[in-house]
Every structure is written in structure tokens, then in C-alpha cells.
Image (cartoon, rainbow, N blue to C red; front, side, top):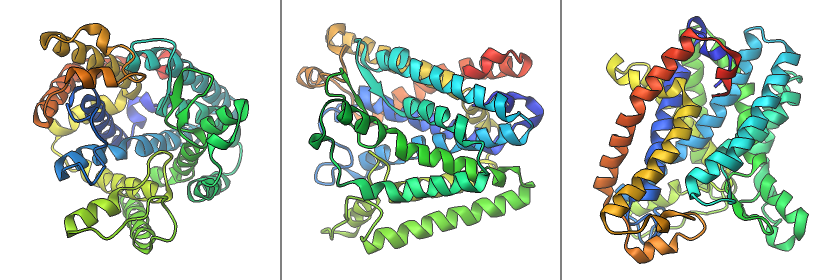
Amino acid sequence: MSETEFEAPRRLEIIDLLRGLVIILMVLDHTRDYFNKDALAFDPLDLAKTTPVFFFTRWITHLCAPTFVFLAGVSIFLQQARGKTAWRLSGYLLTRGLWLVALEVTLISFGFNFEYPYFFLQIIFALGVGMILMSVLHWLPGRSVLIIGIVLIAGHGLLGGIRAETLQGTDQIIWRLAMEPGGLSILPGMVVYPVIPWFGILCLGYGLGPVFRMEELARRRAITLLAAGFLGLFFILRLSNLYGDPNAWEWQKNPGLMVLDMLNVAKYPPSLDYTLVTLGLAFCLALTLTHLPRFLQSPLLAFGQTPFLTYLLHIYIVHVGAILLGMAQGIPPAHFTNFLGNPGQLAQDGWGIGLLATYGVWLAILCLLYPISRMYARYRLKNRQWWLSYL
């Protein structure tokens, strides 16, 4: 996602491959949201109602946001390590962060809802604010930033006793933006990704950035150790049920449900257990993706080299596609506006298709996105204009 990262000789394919995978999973998640008949009926992680396939269709997409933010932190470190001056990097992070926030509250929020104003503050908002903060924080030593990241990831759960409902007015909005997902009170919309927990993951990526500067064999060993450490600590914390996630697991009637319950960790905001298991798995995937045949790597690289454009396009393609399919089923297009503010309307219409058909729509959308992303990736490699780093 960085400016210098698009210079052909300097790209790290392990980053592009992993980022491309999470973009693909992100498209799956939003396709499920807009097309699947059960998406508006119940939470796919609700053990009383879900099925294993439906559960993991949702759960696997948990990897998207933390991996995306972590890699953004790595990219910031790599820009600095490759010679971008501190002042120039600060200016870039500040302007890019403001740009991301502006797009989140306009084009992106509108794309998800098709009614405005409605502020749907998701990962791009949290990442944008995180970049603004990092424009100052990157002046600190890398180890200091890493420690800050660890403290925020491991410690923000200690503030769980403070509830937005007990606050009023501006204090409540600030707390929502910083720590606790929920409605924006006097403003139309909701915060889904509060800044502070996700900023911790951004700092973690920056602090662990030196790993990605290592020679390949040393880098693979380091990533293997990180994966083992993250997953090992997750199992210790999760099995003990003492700290790490607000949702303690319980004994279930069969081993399968027990596994699902243990994996059902909190994303909103991201708990310590959630961060450990998702990033641990992401590290494992990073090691695996580099061994894929080239024809399988190609779409991952295309999406991974053009993450923001692909993200922006898929929102509108998914939403418009849902409208077109709905019209074919006799549902008025107007029922697809204010999708986030009034999902009950579509539920009353009996809208939606089965999970298998939803997977088919997901693959069709990826096939539509792939040539666009590939052409844009090639264009960026041949054209080094400064403004391209913002898309």
C-alpha cells in the first residue's frame, strides 16, 4: 500500500500474496452479507443456529482486517528502511491517512449503504487514523513502537468495564471512535472498527517490520517462530479462559461445537485472543502461499498490488449486483438503499440465495475484478506518479 512499495525491484511477493488473499476473503465476506439468505437472519457465529460450513465461511474472513492492518504497518517500516526521510514519511502518512478517512465517510460509506449521510466507519477509517498517528510515532525507535503495539493489543481489554452507554454526548462519540463499536448517537451511522485496538496491530506490524528485511531463509524461520509463538500463546490463554477474550468458552454437547466455541473470539473490538489466532494463521499462510504454482499466485499478486482500488470497486460491484439479482426476483431497487440502517426491509422481502450460490457469485465477482486489478497493477509498475500511491 505504500508509495515505494510499487517499485518493481523492491516488492516483496510474500507481502503481496498475503494481502491479495485477504482481499479475496474480504470480497467473500461482503458477498455473503449482501447475497446470502441467512446473512440477515442470524449471526453465523451463533452456535445455536449456525452450521460448521456457515460458521467457517464467516470465521475465515476474520483474518482480513488484522492481516491488512499488520501489513500496512510493515509497509510503513519498509518505506523508512528503504530511505524515505522522516519528514517525507510523516507528510505522506498524514496526507494518506486524511485521504483514507475522507473516502471512508463518503464513497465507501455510501457504497455500503446507498443512502447518505450514513457514516459506516470500518477498517479504512481505523487505518487512516492509525496512519495519522503513525506520522508522529514513527520518529520513535522501532522497539518502542513495538512495545506500544503489544501494550495496546494485550491491554485494551482491561478497559472493558467502561461502557459507552454510561457516557453522554461528545464523550460517548469519542469513546466509540476510540474503543467501543456502536452507534454514533447524534450522528447517523456506526463505528465498527474503533481506532485504538487496531492501531495496536498497526504498531505491531511496524515493530516487526525488520523481519521482512531479512534474507529469505532467515525471514521464513522468523515468521515460523512468530506463527508458533502467536498460536501457542492463543491456545494457552484460550484454554485457561482467564484472560484474552470477553467471551469465555463453555462445555458443549459434542467436540465439534466445543472447537467452534473456542474459536469464537471477539472481533469488535479485536480481543487479544482474536489477534493472536488470526495473525498466527496469517503467518502460516504467508509461508504457504509462496509455494503455490505461479498461475495461482497471479490473482493474489494482482489483488495484493492494488488493494485499495480493488477494495473500493468490490463494494459497488457487490451492492449493485445484489440490486440486479433482487430486481430479477421482483424486489424493488429502493429496498436495497439504507442497507445498513434498515436491513429488516430485505428480510421481510425474503431476499437472499443459498450459501453454495453465494460462493458462485463470489467467484464471479473475483473474475470481474481480476483483469481490472491486473491492468492497474501493471500500470502502476510502469508509471511512478506520486498520486498513484494514494490509490
